[in-house]
Length: 128
Image (tube, rainbow, N blue to C red; front, side):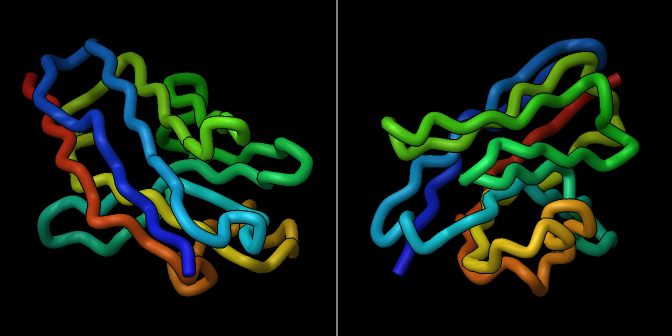
């Protein structure tokens, strides 16, 4: 089993920055992909960024490219999402997720169904 715990959410004005952290526990060696997803009220959950934990390959949704950066610290068993130039449309609950497959398509496609482990989510609110 893998447990994921997010932290770092909060409220910020447009143009500001936030850093999210996902602490990982359990059999993390069984995961090959980790990612950040988000879900805004009334909308479906969408992929934001993913990382192939073995090789470091990163993938981003077009809406966050150039503004968000996903990174990992294997020694600390942590995943991060650095968010800059935040916009009101970035407001959502942000989830950390992990997947066991090493198929690189999972990172690129960012489909929720391909990720088996999920955190409880952390709220990010961006005001204009």
